[in-house]
Amino acid sequence: MILFQSSWKLLLRQQRKLERLSVKDFYQTKHVEHKGQVDLVTETDKACEALIFNHLKQQYPSHKLIGEETTAACGATELTDEPTWIVDPLDGTTNFVHGFPFVCISIGLTIGKVPTVGVVYNPIMDELFTGVHGKGAFLNGKPIKVSSQSELVKSLLATEAGTKRDKSTVRSLRMSGSCALNLCGIACGRIDLFYETGYGGPWDVAGGTVIVKEAGGLVYDPSGKDFDITSQRVAASNPLLKDAFVEVLQQTE
Image (cartoon, rainbow, N blue to C red):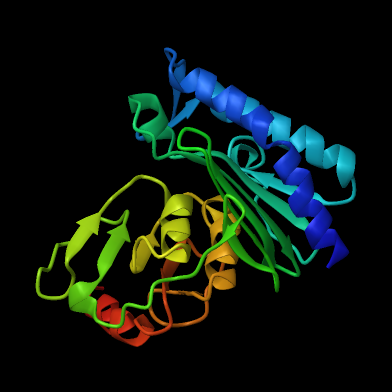
């Protein structure tokens, strides 16, 4: 538990450095590259990841590191049981490029392949979500909890998958462009349901899953099975909605 607490405090100390870097670049012209036909990468993605990685290497030289812009680009994304920091330096890069403020830095620590520390920070909106296994979840230092909604017809659904909107089962649909912030939306009760298939990798969910669970929520595979951080399939909700949500998801697959 000392490791969890020190890791969380360590990341908080880097918050302002990341904020200055990200906010400054958000309001300037971006230098954009393509990763494949659709995915984008900016100089800010690379700079944020370098800042985070360099600091973690100094503090925890024996820990493994997985990051979207470096480790993953080299094809080395295998997750082991060793303590591993999983970093998305800028989740929502397309939003960032277009000046849409739904962007964040997502950091998770896994031990035995289990997410145990999560930090998700939106520097544009100055919202810091944190969670440590067994210690609760917080937004800017204040405790957060998932919603108490129990009916699908009154639920707000967020997803990044191309899905048909069904007015008979959900009130509305949001596609925001950030998997990590969607998970945080579940954690603080802003949204009731979230699922996504085919997202980039474990860096999109490593931080947010901790925060959801510590806020009293559930994270699982859209089929209803246990969540696998390497599967690129995730669903999340409060406990009251899981069964009905899984039933609907199974009908759409």
